[in-house]
Every structure is written in C-alpha cells, then in structure tokens.
Length: 248
Image (spheres, rainbow, N blue to C red):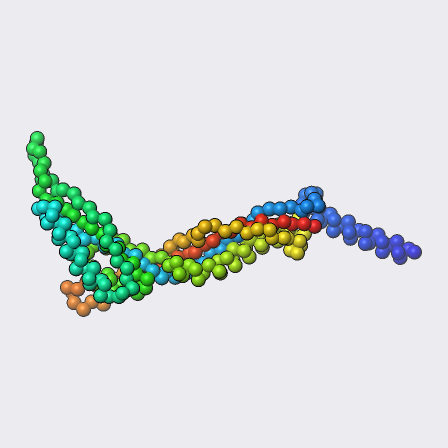
C-alpha cells in the first residue's frame, strides 16, 4: 500500500512539473478549444548566374542643318545594325528615341544668339540571350557608337526553372516557423494544421555584380582592346504567407 501511495505521488508530481513547464512557456496562458490561428511568412533566396544582357548604344552627329545631322545619324546607325546582325541571329535589335537640339553661337553684350548647328542622337537597344555575345558586339561597334549602358539579368525562362526550388524553400521556411511557434505553446509539430498559402505576383530579382574590363591582349596599338565580360549573378527571392492553426 505504501509503495502504491509513493508511486501515485511520483506520477502526480511529474504531471504537475510537465504542466508547470508548459504553462511557463505561455506565461500561464492556455489554448482554447479552437486553438490559435496565425499567419507566418516564408522566404527563400537563390543566387543564380545572369544569362541575358542588354546594351544601349548611341549614335550622334552635329551638322549645319537638322536634316544633315539626322541623315548622318540614321546612316551610321543602319551600318552598325547590319554589322551586329551578322554576329548572330539570336541578337534582338530595336531602335529607340531620337533627340535633337540646336547649337547656338557665342554672344557678346546684347547680341542675340543664333543657331549655327544641330546635334542629333538616336539610341539602339541590343538584347543578347547569350552573354558570350556581349563581348563580340562591343568589339564590333565600340568606337563607332557610344555605349550608354550595359546591364545583365536573369531571363524569364531561367526564372521558371528556379521557381520550384524557391517555392519549396519558402514553404519549408514558413512551416518551420509555425512549428517553432507550436513548440513555444507546448504543442508538437503534428498539432499544426496548414490552412492556406498565398503567393505574391512576381519573383524579386536583385542584380549582384557584373564586370567588363579590357583585355590585355592587343594585336596592334591602333585597335581597341577586346573586352572580357563577366556577366555576374542575381539574387532571386520569393516571400509567401501561410495561414496555420495550432490545436491541442
């Protein structure tokens, strides 16, 4: 009989200790019959190589008349477009905006300035779905057109390939947070129910780095150095929200 009493007291003490530990994790608050429903965010990030590039070239000219300057720009740009097209059929070319403005004479005193020339410029956008073509484009027209900008990015096709991995990571991150919350409430992972997952409209892309430098190898001093292109990488990120319910 004495042994039975001691055993009962020990079991009761262990249950009381377990109850105290659970209560302490919630500051004495207990879950109601319906449990608790909350929304947790899940995030994922991948660093992937850039696989496309966009170059903006500018042709400009200054002549006495607007017509002469415009014709010179158009002729120059058409010649360079034909050169670029010979490099690869995968290159996408598009002529952009044309701008013009007058050049005025210098004046002294109360002299009225007069137009002495016109300056015209037009931009050409070149898209390369193969970053290895960038150096060839630059080598072909550099010095004849002005390179206004060069940027690298991740194509839509590549983004689609990484989408599943991003989703898996984001859901895993969200559910892990939900389990941590459940454990803080004295519950187990099996007591967490996933109700709903909401996705944003797009995947965020942040370019990391891209580098263009001139090669040290030159055939002669009259030639422009062939550039060496490092396309760099971009960070793809995805954030989701998951609604979960934790019940005892």
